[in-house]
Length: 195
Image (cartoon, rainbow, N blue to C red; front, top):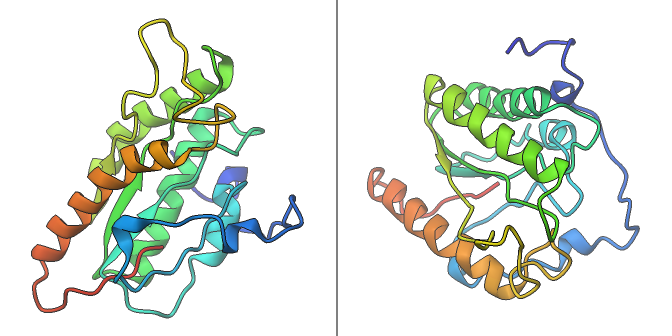
């Protein structure tokens, strides 16, 4: 997909805190990542364009985690995937030494719905496009959230969008394992920055 000005999900711009309570600064506690030097550029309600605007960090990073796209309601699946690709390309340009992990988009909604279908399509597009880019891996974050009847449990996502502690555990365990694997590949330094 061409990135430039034709894709609104690939054009960086600042976004306002729509909740108005700075919750993104305080509500994520990742027990798996204590002891890491972490920078969180994304927050609840984040879109790819805001993440692009904040990815211009000067810190040298070993591993960067990108998890964005589910809030791009006004964009097509192709545009969302293109926005995520643009983020990866920007990181590769600004942080060529970094290894990038893109977390797949989670299913959303208690029952099957168009947004859940769109997120699945974004993941399918990323499975094809990301292997063509340098230093990036897609981590499937499905985690068994969708049950055989097509429903998502409120025990995993309290509002069928945002994760509970148990839901985060399903994501963080494989993420932690992958980060540790990537750090083992760069043994000169065991510290990482997660964006």
